[in-house]
Image (cartoon, rainbow, N blue to C red):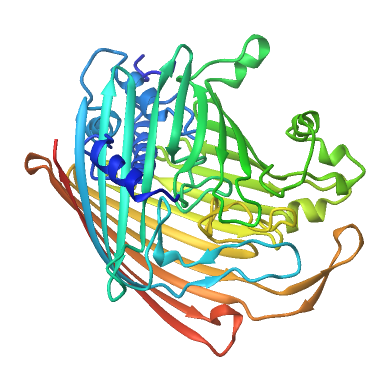
Length: 517
């Protein structure tokens, strides 16, 4: 165990029952995906202050419990700079909250268009796609999200509903569903999560290439190590480690309904300054998907099966694999440089241009949690690039998506993006985040020749998007009330790859959270 350095779709009846009886996020202003992001952010700050230094961060299942146990292991109270973390990882016995939000958006949304190299059923609409699959339609949106939570020992039950109306449409809601509904906790050396819960890997603040938390929560069963462990023998040198396995079922409104995702991730911290993560996600099965025996599927889950197989026609699944490395730069107040590489399927050993080009995704980033000595200002910057075939597939035409939102990087296939974010925390009750993004997406059309050699048939202009977002959070704990305000602007040139089209988009949203218990 790591320690301180000193040491979908539902019926209205089911929805109503869930909203009435289900129990949240522990008096938090944040939604579950946002809370996970903040736990990671605060952990980076604690490591920057040299309070914690041995916890791998890339695997988030059970991370809050790992941090809580690490902070409490010396029996003392958290220091002032850890107070934000203490609130994030605490679990009240019984809580209830109600979130009301009002937002207007003109999102410049469009479909991801085909390019002759496989398919994906997804939308590009960054302004309208909030974390956790919370979509806004163009126009005025009203949303209600009741949230409830209950704790028994170290086990917690979380539930959250979502009802959204669009101004000017009928009185019926545009959507009504159970947004999250899961139970989690430790059992022996393992940590379990069962239900509809966010599944997130990696530390990118924009979106990891495999599982980023952009889509709504997945119906899944997740098992992780409870805290950290060390491998035996000489492998002990790999340092504190965390491992998880998740099995999720996708929705039925897709080309191959109810296909399954099986994912596993291993996070290692061989030195205080170095963290390594290895991940694998396999999409298979479903109604009308490629058929295979149980033995074939077990073999297919082995990472190296396809590269060692001479017959590509034997593919029965879609695989995404990732490797990420993070290095804490000494003498820089805990600043981290990180690299993430992901591959969509695996070619042969002689197809390196396909493996590292067409089917690959790259993220290069830097995080500075203490731009100033007091840690009040943090800065992050990332560069993203995705290959022309990344996220596209033949047997699973909808791709790795949920509700037309990519489960991984919102950049989508064949894109390049630069992102900058600055977080300002003047005190524990206020937080301001400003983000700037510049994205370029291509949609040239290709013809595939032998051995995946590509021939460009149509050359289209690149779509370019420049975006500015600002988020402000303010809480009044003594009044059981908090607000989150978001505003944004986006300029798009060559919209939908038409050189003559220029678009302007905007977003304004405010949400109020009332803690009822």
